[in-house]
Image 1 (spheres, helix red, strand yellow):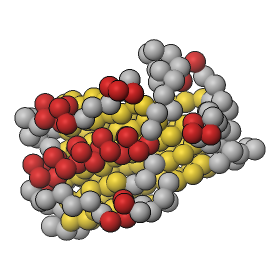
Image 2 (cartoon, rainbow, N blue to C red):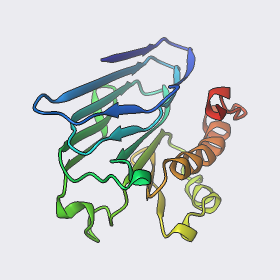
Image 3 (cartoon, rainbow, N blue to C red):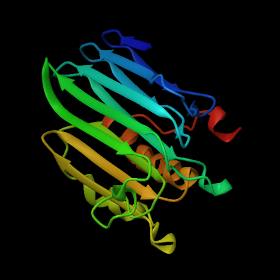
Length: 212
């Protein structure tokens, strides 16, 4: 379990040095729970490395962000199903992934991804289109003029991958669906560079660990 508690008027950027890995399981479910609290006028930038879900894994991942009415949050979550670079795909196993954002004790955004290895959802047009990498990025803000600029900075059409940006209920939502963890991260870093300046009012300086 991971617990993050950002105090009032504090600012933290949290990242990780390497991917999280969920290996094949003969029975037990691997669980990861992340609870994040940001107090009044606090700011958290939450940028963990991707999770790799190996074929045969049984994984349950839950992230809950608890905010006040005047705290700030920008964060992403990236998952890779199998190891496509080695021609290993998510043919067996289960993934139950939840991402929740709460403000003042009320749900602002609740998402759930439930996948079963080999399920038609993985390749269907209404599902994941055969793409193994899934990413979502969230920024809590009431600013409404940023979405168009986010859409313009990212181009993944060469690989026929998908990127979208939209806003609803005081939250900007960005999604990536494609073949590459590196491209997902690159998309989200470009988004972050705009959001950091416009929402947090700080220059975007990439952590050195992202270049190692």
